[in-house]
Length: 467
Image 1 (cartoon, rainbow, N blue to C red):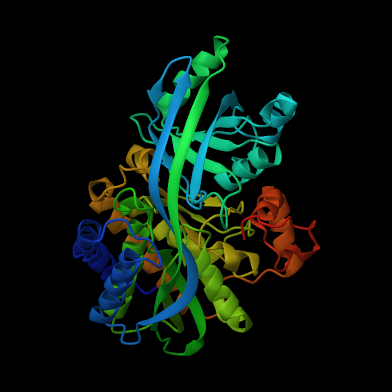
Image 2: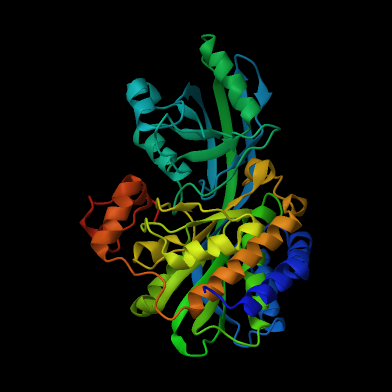
C-alpha cells in the first residue's frame, strides 16, 4: 500500500476539512499584494512565509539569501500615431530597458516564430514587431524570451506581444536575463486585433513607445523548512513553489496559490504523529519570475547533495488535480499508479504525462537529473485568462480546488518520502539530454543561455541571453 490508511485519512481531513493556508493566502494578497523579490514587498512576503512555517510546527524555518537585480516598472506611454491615433493598453515586460523613446512603423510577425521572420525578411529591420502568444500548428509555443531574441536578431527596435485574453488584459513577464536589448511590452488582445485589421487592409501603422523602468541591486530570500525523516533523514523529498509575483495585481493564482499549497502540505504533514522515513524539505522560492533565480541558486549552492533529493514536487499555478507529470520517465511506477487510484474521489485519473517542460522551479533540478513529480491541475478559464495581468486577484482562487490540490500534494509527498526504496531513479547526463531532445527544448535552453551540465556539449551560447 502506498500510504497507511490512517495517515491518508488524516491528511484528507487536514487539507479538505480544516485548511488554513487558503485564508492565509487571502491575507497575503490583500496586505502585501504583488511581491517583487529584493524589494520591500518581497521582504514582507518572505517574512509571512517564514512565520507560518514556524507557527505550523516547523521549528527550523530559515532564510537562504542571494543577490538579485531588482527591476521595477515605472511609466509607459504606448500609442498609435497613424493611420488612426489611440493609446494602447500596454504594460512593460520585466527587464525591459530603463528608458525607451521611439517612433517606428509596425510589422505583423504572426506568432513571432522563425518562419514568420523568414517570411518578412529584411522588412523587420528598424520596425516595431507585433506578434501574439500562440504557436503554429504542431509547433512548441515559444517563451516570450525566445520571441524577443528573434525580434532583436532581425533588427527590430521593439516588440509588442498581443495578449490572448479578452477584456483589455495585457500581460507582463520576464523577457531577458539582464537588460533587454530592445523595448518589450505586452498589449491587449483588442489593440492587437485592431492593428492587424489595419495592416490587412493595407495600412502601415506607426506607433510611439515611451517607457521608464527602475533597476537596482537587492537581496532576495528563499524560505526553507524541514520535516526530518524518522529513518532516512539524509534523503529528501523537496516540495516547493515560488512566492514572488508580478506587481500588476495580487499574484493570487501565480503563484500565491502554489505557495499556499506548499504551506498547507507542511502544516498537514507536521500535524501527523508519524513522520515519513525521509526528510521532507519545503521551499518558498524567491525571484522565479525573473528567471528562476531562487531555485537555480539553491540547486547550485547544494549541487554536491542533489543526489540525496529523491524527488522534487513543484507547485506553480496548480489547479484542480487530475494526473501526474514525471518528465523524462514514461513509466511513473506502481507507487504513483496506486495513488492515482486511491485519489480518484478527488478527481485524479489514470493520467500520466512525461514530456519535459521548462520555465518553473522544477527546471534546475530536472536538468540535474533529479526526479520531478508534478501534479497536473485544471485552473479553468479564470486562472488562464488573468495570467500575468491586473486580474490575478484572490477571488480567482477556488477554495475547493485548493483543498483537493493540497490533499493530493500532501498524500503524494508523504508516500514518496515513506516508501522503502527510492521512488524514482535519477537520470544521468545522457538521459537528461535525451529527455530535452524528445521534448524539443534544446533551442529554448540555448535562448536562456544555459551552460551547465548536460548542455555543455550544445552549441555555444551568445552573450546576453537569459540564464
